[in-house]
Image 1 (cartoon, one colour):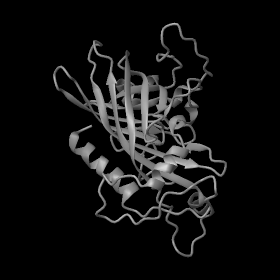
Image 2 (tube, helix red, strand yellow):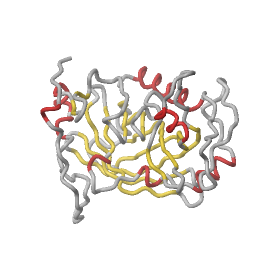
Image 3 (cartoon, helix red, strand yellow):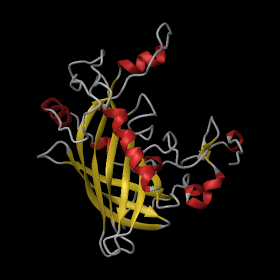
Image 4 (cartoon, helix red, strand yellow):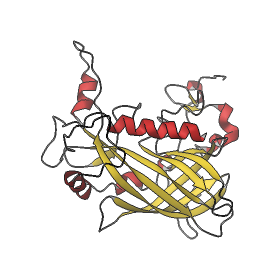
Length: 295
């Protein structure tokens, strides 16, 4: 990803979740506090501090389960685009812990894989903004039951920063850092899940979005990176016709050479030495439903 594109995308993320008013959801219940109803003027800055109410919300609702990988399903890995050719990179968030002294701060540990090279990493993620997701726009006079149902949900957009440091001494190790966006919902029982009302804002349908740069401490070389939790629904404009097919979407064969041909494989590359994991076999899409499309 080119630096110019990255800067524009980060600005768009902030615009989508910040410059629209925070929404007081009509369906809010006592176990689900909403974010403040304060106005979000166009002049609001990205560094506007969290309010006491927002900090209380983050103390009550731990986002650990939204970030940590569940090892039984490989699709819960984070997938993304790395470097000038946007080659596939994978991240397994093996351990996520909320800082007991700061509910906005999360400690991360895991492994990533790039071109068959597996590298351990540690790092952290800090939430510095919390916004209600903008509601679905329903034209006056139209009936949109699905949109109305979405608007009644308590949906939020948490924005922050991340830093992931690869283990020193590993070939090509460096540090990933940038902006983090998490789109999530709190149901009436107080349970959290990744969800979004609109793939045009926030995490852009990726549910969790990490976007920034990798930097080599040895050469100071920089490479852009974009990671998401849900690659199939990520509203990206990096590749044209990245996925094809409707009922059972798959990756365009055009991009197989960039690492996307192994997405459906069940290789547990993230397992540490001596660790045994159990994983359900993952079925590849129905080939009959895949539409052959050329760029």
